Length: 626
Image 1 (cartoon, rainbow, N blue to C red):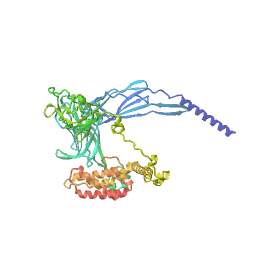
Image 2: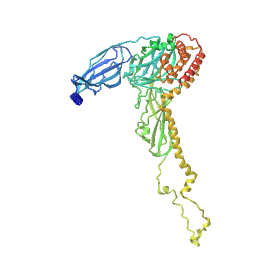
Image 3: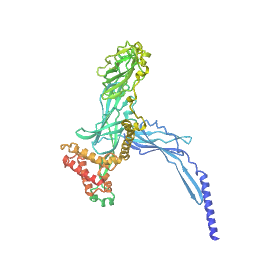
Image 4: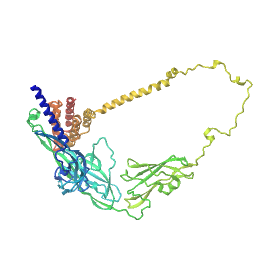
């Protein structure tokens, strides 16, 4: 009985506790959260061109409206997304249940300052919980970066003087003297509304390496290379933008910047156990140390002249430069109303992608003789030419040719307006013939009918005995045994099986791109090391060998692309079972290449010995990592 009574009391207490918890949960949050908004920056001292994270934190609402950052005129703004930060907790103290609910949301952005000095992020308004919340201003101190001997950034214009509407090239070249890891370009001129900007077509060369450069609202394809500046050899990264001035004047292109993490040295690992149980116990182990660098460019000047009004053709459409135009038509023999394909080829200026032709219907000779669709197909750039196609239809048999096509342009070299013209294209246009019943029946009604010949034998004249008949079977069996039907029946299943096999193979090959990347690592290493290495340029040879090793390790170990040091892969190699001798050989090879590449001194080994050592080390690594 005592035991039953104890059980009943326990059940009663648990029931009461559960009831209290439910009442507490149903009662809602303890204390209402007052909505608020706060602005936070990652750092308040930055270098011009370097970016930092800016956040707008909203408390009291988990679904606020996106804040308006249009007032941040001195910063380039890049959205990084938002995150719901809501949370809730339940607390029981002395049988009293309380529930705390916190609702919140954080908007994140990447800001890049566009000028030096003390810049202020103004008050930001956020609509949340039916209210307009405001943040406090935040000040950021932006310092000018100092140029170093290891990094240079240069802007160059294809012309220092041009006309309004004339495309010119802006070339950006980054000279790199250290091993870098990650980079970010900032070109304030791209925000200048006095210019239009375009990305030129890049003809990719399989023997070169390319990088996609993010420029905020635009992007470019940069090519890796080598060049000498002020007597020093650098690796380079070069890309171009097409600049089209929209107004006249003298403009100073604001300096561009590039921020990166660069290798400045090495340090020993501080983990005692890692050093004790490795070959690096006696100080051989090194870990790359990276610092942040920001490089500022020069400020080239561009003088832009207005187009003269004197001599401007009435149908001038803004083509500036020197143009050449050709045309062809097919077919050249047609009936009235038949479609004729007109092919027009434009060449001359360096940049042609955004070039358009004046409407043909506005040229009187075309309007009189041809029916022209209102829209012309977009042209296609082929090398240094742009090709347009247009369908035209002759409206009269009196049309004898396609008249010359005129393209007015302003010749910037001569400083005058000129007109490029195509040669006339002769045509033979026939009157459209009316189709009659005789044409449809395919016979000539004027042909006399043949007379009926009378035969006395009657129908017996055409009679033959049954011996001339041959037995022919047309059943299902005859059809299936015919070679044609046999092939037609077997072909679809065979094609399906072949397609299934090919699809399965492709899917398996693409199912794991990282595994495929690892399989191709060693053949790519061998291919890279077969390239000629100049003995008289040890630094260049070391750079090629080092780059090949970094690419191999990145692909084989499935690491992110970029510069890799021995310290970055040491632990992974040991975990994968690579022998101590192979690790030591790789460490020694990295040290030799980096000494020749980055230290600026002479190399102890010639190019051929470096290649041979790299091949032997790669072969040993491949054997251990399979």
